[in-house]
Each structure stands twice: as structure tokens, then as C-alpha cells.
Amino acid sequence: SSGINAEYGCRNLDGTETSISGNPTCITDDPATAMEGVSIAVFMNPAFTHNEYLKQLEPFVQAGLILVALPGQTGFEYAVRKIWKEKRKDVNIIAFESLPWACNMSNIGKKAAIFGFKEVLEGGPMQISLDNQATEEAVATLQRCLGPVPVLKINHYTCGMSLNTLNAILHPSLMYGQWFGWDGKPISEMPRFYFDANKLGIQVMEDVSNEIGSICNAIAKEFPELNLKSVDPIFRFLLRVYNDQIKDKKSLYTAVRSNTAYQEIMHPLKETEPGFFVPDFGSRYLTEDIPFGMIPLRGMAVLMNVNTPAMDKVIEWAQDVTGKEYLVNGALAGKDLWETSCPQSCGVTLPSQLFGC
Image (tube, rainbow, N blue to C red; front, side, top):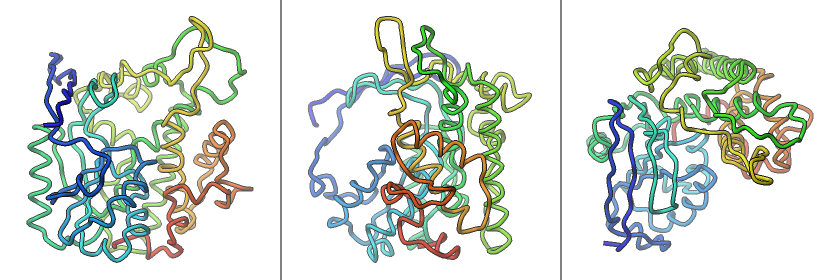
């Protein structure tokens, strides 16, 4: 045992609350120690740390390892391809579309709170599995760890996971909807991120989702052998993963604003003086979900010759408020593109290179 007690509080699907605690076996910053005897490695860390983890673990990767990204985030497979090079061909790589829960940390490394469960999560391998039985056993092991929900399903390749990306659609769109045109003055009321979502943010969300649908259609036309039927429009995605927790299913607008898993999540803010707040544009909703979400989607759109005006306006606004540069005159040519998981920054230059290992 590491000697550290970890605890999380959980609101169950039936409305009851549970507190669970345990002692992690090992907590270390030594990659050799972390990988000793490991047959399944699971990434549940933010996407902006993936590259560093992949670099640190690469010397200790053994043939037959199963790497699971939970979530994979858009472009995860391209980062693996770039950093692990030939080693990736001897590793089973699986990515899932989202985290298992809506959750927050209240004390880093020691305490977390789960507000709601995803009910179903779909995943896919990066390549045709080297060992189907080992992959099935890995998913079964993860299912035992997570409990009965979310139900884990393997449905399509990781390319489908990159396109079926919840955070890249939700977070930047709702940030744009709330703060585009903000006058710079502190506010006194803290807006809820989802329950107070406005019609502008919801419309942008739907437009971005439709553009992802256009990317899927372009891929299906050029590569009909690929199965991307499980890539859902955002409304259907939310109904699938949160079904019973959404109280008003009439529209995307009502679904976002009535999902009980989201009710306690606030906009990321910084307090300037007691009782007054400004938006925190350094939150992961922009610093993660733009470079490791919307930018790789934009890169896939370029390769498939799909126009993305909704993505472009969100990216241009986000790069302005975060001090980054990804788009220049409508082209993916910004100085900060290299630090993203955009396929072009990982050496992908042809549509056929988007898929497989």
C-alpha cells in the first residue's frame, strides 16, 4: 500500500449517495516502477499530459501491452503513432469516447466527487487487435473496476472515437456561448455551465456536431469499408450516455439544461474580489478541449475537404482569449499547432493515414 487514503463521494443513479475509500498500491513518478508487471495501462489523465506520459513510458513498453485511453480524446491515436513509432504495432490500443463519470476533484490525489454516471461508453481499437481474447479480457477487467455502469462496448476504430468526442463539442461551444462578446467587467452571479447554457452556445454546439457529421459522411464515401455508424450527433449522444438523468428530452437545449449529472457544474471562474468573478480562460475547457479536441477535428476536416465555419469561429475566439495561435487566415498554420494532437502535427498528410496503425 502507498499509505495514502483516497476517497470519493458518489451520487448514485437512484439518487442515493455513497462514499468509497481505498489505499492505492503504488503512487510513483518513476515510469519503470509504474510499468513493472503491468499488462494493462489505463490513461485517465488530461489530454495535454498524454504526450509526456507516452514519452516517459515508451522505453518500458513490452509486446502484448494493452493501452486503454479512458477517454481517448480526439487525435490520441496520432500521438501514439508519433511517439511509440514501431512499438505501437505490438501493443493493443483501445480508446473510449469519454470519462465514465461527470466528476470533479476536491483534494488532488486524495478526494473526488462523482456527480453522475455515463450509462454506456463505446470504444474502439487503434488497429485490428493482435490478441482479441486479451482485448476482451482487458475490457472485462475495466468493467469489473467500474461496476455495472457505464457499460463498455467495443464498436469501431479509434478514428470513430476521435469523431465521437463529447468534450470537444460541449465545452468550447458553451464557453463561446457564455463569453463571446463579454465586456470584461466582473460578474456577481456564478453561472452554471450546463443548467444556464444559452441558446447561442447550444446552437454552436449543434453546428459543430453537424460539421463532424459531414466529416463522417466524407470518410464513409471515400472509405466505405469503415464503420462509423456509431458516431452520434450530439443530441443522440447525450441521450445515449445520460438517458435517465436527462429530465427533459424535447430538444438539445432542454436536454443540456436538465441533465442532473451536470447540475452542480459551474463555469470556470476566477474571483477578483469577494463576490466578483471573471471567466477563467485557462481552464481545461479551452486549454485542453481546443488543442486536443476541436483542432484535431479541424485537421481531419482539412484532409477530408470539409468546411467548418462553426469550428472556425470558436477556435478563432478561443485562441484570442488564451493567447494561442492555431488558425491563420483560416488555415491550420499557427505557431502553436505543433503542441496539439492535430493529425498534421503528427505527420498525417493523407486521408488514408487517419485510420489503423
